[in-house]
Image (cartoon, rainbow, N blue to C red; front, side, top):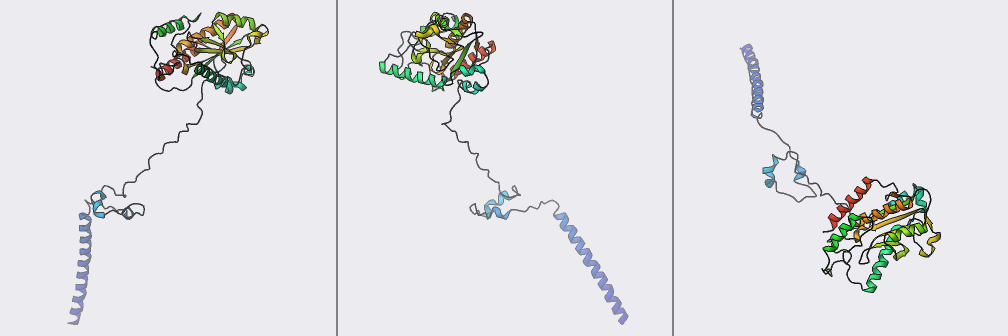
Length: 317
């Protein structure tokens, strides 16, 4: 009897143990199959309890949790625009005078303060016009001697403005300007090939080309209204001329410059200035150079004209 009871208890323990193990395996298999079609995600709890953001009700975020498994969307700060220094000087075409002064031996005899002299001339000329209470200027230009293209452009400009009164609110020298435009200079040089230009020969050429001695003791091409279209200075400091001493005067080069921002037809005036440079080159055995002191080529001439035309299209009617 005892052996039967002992044998039966052992059998029952084996049977119950086997059933327990089978039940555990079946339960695990069932859990695995039931979770096969679902995706478990862990949410960032700091998203709801951030010290830098206001507390948000968890119920409000329930519809979005499945779409943001790694926490809330993070905001990126707006890019900051770099500060614009309006006091910074804007480079103009006159700057190569100083930049190239250490490269070209010719620069030792050219004025370093040509831009400053131009500004002084501009200020003096405006002060003189204000003191004399001159009438508003018209758009008539004096026709050049050897620049037919410029003369044709100026005649068209004069024909379109004769008999029309200038608007008192518009600048007298720039009735076509519609917005404020930056200063724009264009510079050409005529340098001697073999020997210096003599005063008498240079003076005869300037008189032949209707260049007038005037403000700042330099020569100017004037329009019929008295406005300076472009100017010619001595390449040797201080850049001025003395008509009384032209018999003994000599210079290795002269410089021509125009202020495009003060003109009504910068392209036409450019052709006039280029025509004078060509005339001096032929009559005085010289060479025309651009603002960088390099020989002026046809390609450079076209680039100057395109640049001036773009300037007019941008700032003028």
